[in-house]
Image 1 (cartoon, rainbow, N blue to C red):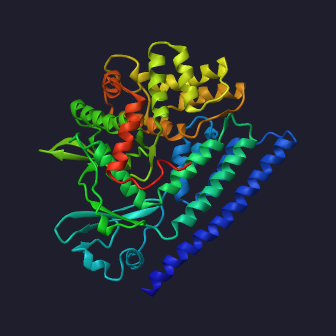
Image 2 (cartoon, rainbow, N blue to C red; image 1 turned 120 degrees about the vertical axis):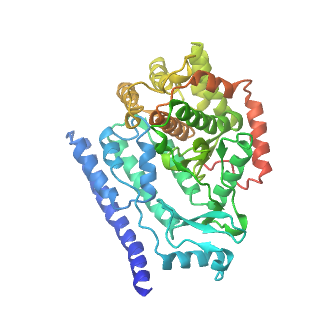
Image 3 (spheres, rainbow, N blue to C red; image 1 turned 135 degrees about the horizontal axis):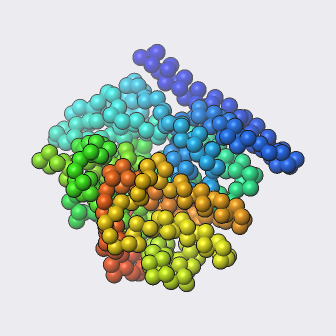
Length: 459
């Protein structure tokens, strides 16, 4: 046991050492870039990207969650940077059993093992912020216990400092998008993911919002076995979504339709989105050997929007559908884009028509023809990037960030499933009789119904 304890301590000590090394490495790159700009020297972007990726690669923790997000937003980072960051995997080493026992004791007390009929020694899943253990309650319920790695608050703050430095480097390279608001939004959401009390509240909200859809299952929290760093819930049996890629079109369409409803219904009716549409956050449950619906997992990254933002999303769609430019511009302004000129509106419309494109035609279609999930949105992002370079820097509103990320991620799921749906009809079902006032009332009621104990979304 002593040997394992030493290994665990070494992992933590090693991480602290890596932070110091990363800070020095990234700082050196920043200085080189600043000097090159001052003296008008051209630098090799691909080489710089590889250097930054090498500097950040030692962390392999919370920052890698951020890298997934950055790769979907046009011009937040140059393509060379996102390509390098995409190679880095969140592969934090799992806690050994001796360390798990100490962590569980700190969360539930010295007698914690007596509170379970059985508790799996090996993690069932590992992630950047924690790991999941399978357990059994005394009443026979199968449980999932999500246990946070130690000292993750410090780890996250250290990673976010590196992120700020990375953004600073990019701003010095005459980026087309000002990343300050994006940085604030990412930092707020990543910090929220550390709070499992908040995640438990998110889960309760989603159970309430989706209670009438029997094709979507949301875990139920076991409050007496949960803390701010331990989240215990019922185990939802399911298979990975990608195992159904070769099933019949009917079954793939059922799963895609369910995913569409699981994402758009909470947003259009309550102003909430599940902001981390990673394939690992969904599993498929089956009945009679056939896929019957989706288990929606992981509620750390939930974004709660004001009704005005939701109204802007609907107005932008209707403005594009009806070719009503005034409505389109009003939607952008409601989101927080400022001082919009004709040329800037045209550039924003490139991205808007890509995101809304499948929703604008009343026909059965794929989400994007002839595009791989990895390439979804890349061509349009490049067009936006190129156009913005000519127009000058634009500030992306803070609330836009996770809306954009989630829409891209959801599109990737449809591509994986090769779904063929009438997205126009699916979307219009969700916004039928839309009213911003009604969204605000529903949001207030559903949050109150579960005693939501936080500000809606921290800035």
